[in-house]
Picture 1 (cartoon, rainbow, N blue to C red):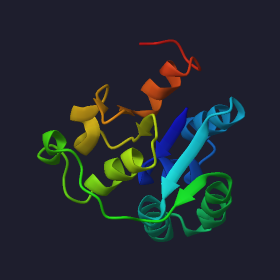
Picture 2 (tube, rainbow, N blue to C red):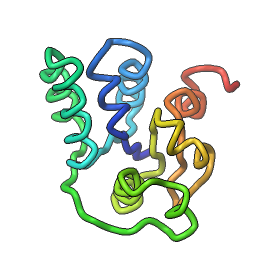
Picture 3 (cartoon, one colour):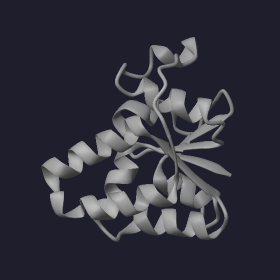
Length: 140
């Protein structure tokens, strides 16, 4: 499975050795491809520089292990363009463009209405729901 990581997932995995980092490690160990693009990576890096600059090296190491694509502006499908704010649309568009099966994001405020939906072949999940889908935790 190809899993696209939103900036907040990258941020969380870099900031602490908690549940999100464990999820990514288990997914990678199980043979799933972790993906992101430079748009998501840059947002994660900006937020870490502001809130936890000592963790930039952890982010850099994480980014070295995943498939990191360049940014390409592309539209999202019309049915979700009205749901997602403009700043979040490039994230979903990148997941679609990179042929990912999943977009994992902790951004419940903006992506919450899309949780559990499949958009152009990309299922949108929270970290917890992805862990359940992958069988790492019991389904809620």
